[in-house]
Image (cartoon, rainbow, N blue to C red; front, side, top):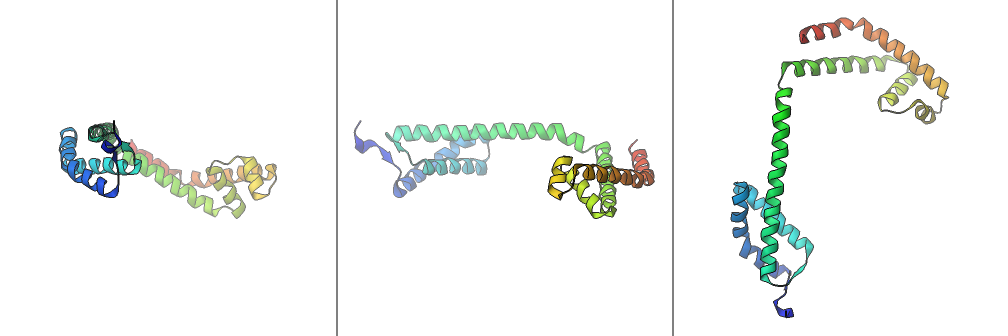
Length: 183
């Protein structure tokens, strides 16, 4: 094969290839996705990838084969993505629309709001220890960060939990009401 048949992507050459194949590739893509705007977007993505690769093609036929395969693959990947998305929506949406889910979320948010309100009422050091615990830190890590002994952290945590249980217990009626609505 002689060097003169090879296709190198210069700016002018790329523009010429784009203008020559864009419409045909959009029509080809549309046979897969049946959406003109989406087809154009997918073909443009293929051309962006072509430009970024900056490869040399043996001839126009190998370039055409690359373009059509790349467009087909983009379309198939898009279809697969849409199927996954639709499956998720079809499985999840009915659960999200239920009254039970709604009430569970309200209950959860109200209990969380109360809990954080009560945490703010704790002494500053206990607040910080509880917040670190809520972030998933272990007692040893909290002790190291705050410059406290492990026993001090454990003691503050124990006392904080006791106070929070007492305060939440006083508001058990709210939780009970929310649970009663949920029944």
